[in-house]
Amino acid sequence: MKLIVGIIKPFKVDDVKDALKDLGVEGITVSDVQGFGRQRGHTEVYRGAEYTVDFVPKVRIEILVDDSDVERVTAKIVDTARTGKIGDGKVWVVSIDEVIRIRTGESGRDAL
Amino acid sequence: MKINAGDTAWVLMSAALVMFMVPGLALFYGGMVRAKNLLAMLMQNFFALGIVTVLWVIVGYSLAFGPGDFIGNFDYVGLKGLSTQVSEAGLPVLAFVAFQMTFAIITPALITGAIADRMRWAAWVPFIVLWSILVYAPVAKWIFGGGWLAQRGALDFAGGTVVHVNAGAAALVLVLLLGRRKNWPRDPMPPHSLPLTLLGTGILWFGWFGFNAGSALAADGVAAQAFMNTFVAAAAGMLGWLIVERLKAGHATTLGAASGAVAGLVAITPCAGFVGGLSPIIIGAIAGAVCYLAIWLKFHFKFDDSLDVIAVHLVGGIIGSVLLGFFADSAINKAGKDGVLFGGGWSLVKEQILAVVVIMAFSMVVTLIIGLGLKKSLSKGIRVTSEEEEIGLDLTQHSENAYSLERV
Image (spheres, rainbow over the protein chains, first blue to last red):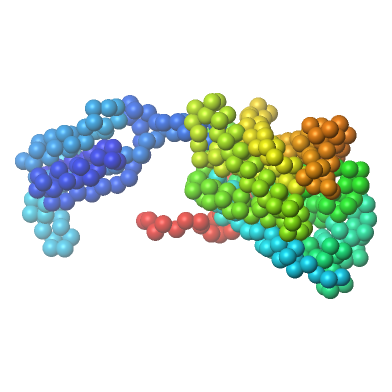
């Protein structure tokens, strides 16, 4: 079992969600996050004073999948979230020891 | 004396309009501070409605409008004997008392923008009490109360000197006494909600019709002229600010539109019932442009005027008061004078500059005495601790939170 984590541009969330639904993905968790990569931040101007805002808003998506689905799902995220411009984000995959569905107590692949 | 119903209705309505400027000002400033200091800002403003109103009835009105050239006496303490009085113009004296009361309320409230994010609440309370009595009342006497500056010939239709120069000068002194906010100007302290600031600006603009047109103390042609001048100067102020901002900083911003409108309103305040024609456009546009440029002062001299009270109110008040010496036109108002551009020569300009300098100096000296006195006498001083500043004034000064968004 793997945890796929993606940091993507906020306006791509709906596209990615729809694409993953079409792929048959059963669940996805999203959260608002901030940070910087090579895109760095942006500047804001208040009454003539310029401020650099280092952290750019992004959305973090998390999906638990079976090992056999990893490639399809990551490829779909990369495909859908790409604009080709700097700041598109990253996707990484983490190995998971155990998953348990709270309602039924099922564990392992049955809980996915 | 027979009561003039039309005039009375307009003055009472105007008092209500100026009262509404206080929450407007609170939102104007409140939107510009960080979310953790929002309630403290709103409270410093809103509290003025509570404390100054009571002070005004007890002693403030008497000191500002009782007999005397430098300061009023105690004849009208508790508004004694005023209930049934009617002025020669047919205005119930209480309508005038109420109208002037709203000016006394909003003037110290203007100061709060400069001291944002760091003044201890327990210091603001005695400060506003002392400042209202020791600074506002005498200055109002000199100009509005027919005192010595008015007798010399200085003009101030609705408070360019009494309200804006006065509050702006006091703000500068308090800023210097309090010191800069932690890590200013290194850390950005961006406005937390410009929509609040825009809403506040709209309310200020609306209320300013009462402030300026109400100062005619009659529902007449001068009031209509003042109303129109107020509207036009705010508009021109917005344009003036935005043009310079676009050229210097690259963008026309919403905060710039709001600030420019307020700068125009400040500058037209002393002129409102004394100028006409295209003058309000020129005065407003100059104020918008120059007030924008005046923000440079705080970065150059490193004084942390948090929300630019000095650049907008002190500088805007000076611009309006001095420009009145050029643009005043007695054809607009028989009680007025002619400025340089209308054949009146330089005498009015000189009186205007004198009034500005005297009021600035008086406000700064007495504010310094009040501020230093509080700094020495209050056990915790006038500024919050570094930790309280970090946590925010809402929680540390008032035990409240502005936004409870029900997150984990």
